[in-house]
Image (cartoon, rainbow, N blue to C red; front, side):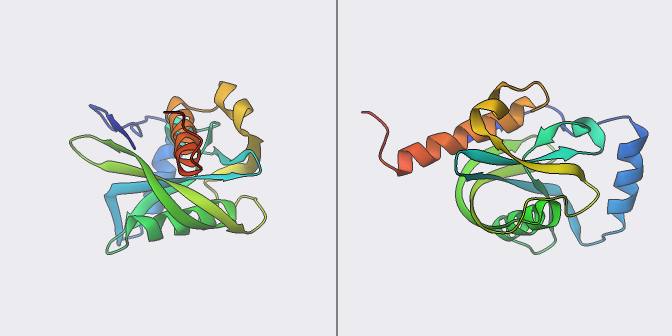
Length: 166
């Protein structure tokens, strides 16, 4: 499991698209704004990514995720968020990373693909793609945090399969 600590919220941005999106999201009174999750979904050597449409991730290919609802478990939130954003049904597997600061936390899971055709499920992504893992790790439009999450997922899969040399 990887732990990342940041001194500020990575989602702090100044552009108008984020402000409009934040206002839309704020209508959900049951959202827990201090707790968020994401899932790394790998299928047949490809990782599920969405091209974000707002905020600091605008135009970037990122792993699907979002905020928990009040009373929701991180695993349930990850399943819900992946489905809402990508139309893909997943099953949570391993906890592979935690990013935290003084104000919030962000948990990343590996997730097993169950079903669904990858396509944008809401306005958060302009496109959803299955991308070759090595391509995703080399692209400039994939943020470092997403790359670290993919690498951690690969390490977890390798370890689980007993492929780690000792």
